Amino acid sequence: MNKSDLGDQAFVRKKDYEGNPYQGSLTKGISYDDYESQTSTLVQEGSSQIFLPVYRRSARKLVNLLQASNGQKVLDVGSGTGISTLEIFLQSPEISVLSIEISEGMMDIARFKFNQLDNLGRMEGITNKRLLKYWGQFRAESKPYRNDVKFILGDIEVIDEIDNESIDVAVGNQSLHWTDLSKSFGQLNRLLKRKGRVIFNSASDFCEDENFPSLKYCFLYNEFIRHVTSEVGKTVKLTSDYRSLSRPKHNINSFKEIAYNAGFELKQINTDLIPVDLQTIILNHMLPIVRQLCDEKELESRQDIKEITEKAIAKTVNNPKAMNDLRHKYGINPIFEMTKKNTR
Image 1 (cartoon, rainbow, N blue to C red):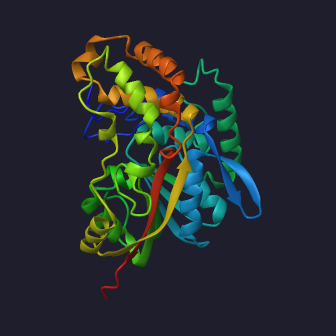
Image 2 (cartoon, helix red, strand yellow; image 1 turned 135 degrees about the vertical axis):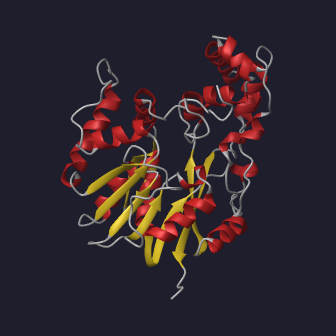
């Protein structure tokens, strides 16, 4: 197992780890959608409040900032299982979308959710009612747009099957930070029309937000995680501290420089703070975090990592000192806009 593998809820580029959770694995792609179907947050929509799944919430924020116009061609970069693609259509129904995704498994699920596939090859035996309901609702919403989206299996860094200056606007929901930014930004410059725009977000473990620094607010620094991993470390060899999981190597200045060299003007326009409650950390993040911190040989030889982690969680839940951290409870997603510079 490669150390960059974060477990069932992570995405790792294919060239880094061939066997990672979402590269061609339909089962793990389903796991990704299962997370989306069970995790929601409260969102203000006009005068009302509604609950939205986590990735759909992020996608909607980006698409609302994108403001695509009817008749335009939109590029959805790293479209995953089609969540952001649907949001694009719901905002501007009379458009066409090219959705590029490097993971074959995730793209197949997106095609299924957009009614371009009648079923998934491994759907037999799936009994998760939440997931099945989520898929049914998604397919009903997306059906009017099934012929207006083209899903492309490919890497934004090297894609060559999209014509130069053929895209009006582009969006990247939790995707571009997994790429070589110099290459992906350069490709976007080639694909976009004059004065074309890109709206994308990042994550606090990749790009530091000046107003909401990771060390102060990110849920990965929560004291609960420290206590659990310390308990696990009494039995299993861990090679790094839990704080190593959120050390951003970029900030707004490095983003601006890379964008400028690729032919864009870049600015940060918003920050999406996603509340992450303790139940979500326990159910969806704790085991992947432990696996990420484990020694590789331990992961290969031991079959009880999950059991050890669950026991550590149970013990930590009963520790008042581990339950008092009310500050580190957010997923921090800075949002950026890039505009193609006028070179003519």
